[in-house]
Length: 124
Image (tube, rainbow, N blue to C red; front, top):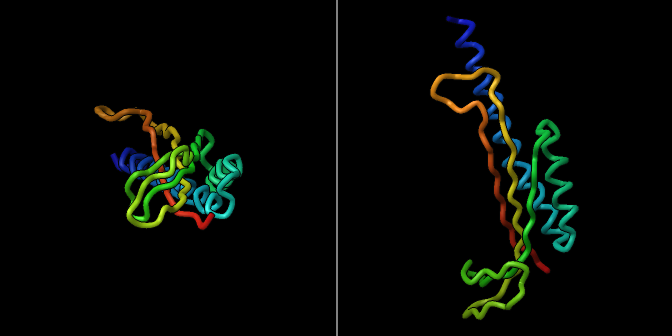
């Protein structure tokens, strides 16, 4: 019984660590995007480099513009939003990875999709 509890604790810890890595990778990619907003491949690479323990990490960068109050977002800035305040540019990065448990636990899925998201404003 103790061994089963130990394995369950280790498995939960691994899953929690993977969730933190996926979230941190999104933040790292967005931080890179603030400095280089046109380099979407660089954003992906920064996210993957921040989570070297996550093999199945996928990253999707998006750039755009919005009103400074956060309304009227336009992905890719294809149309400039009409705002009563300033228009600002942003980058965002969504990351995801699949976590597989060590054992199959009754009533719980053996595979869990983890998600991370970060959105930051740029000065460009």
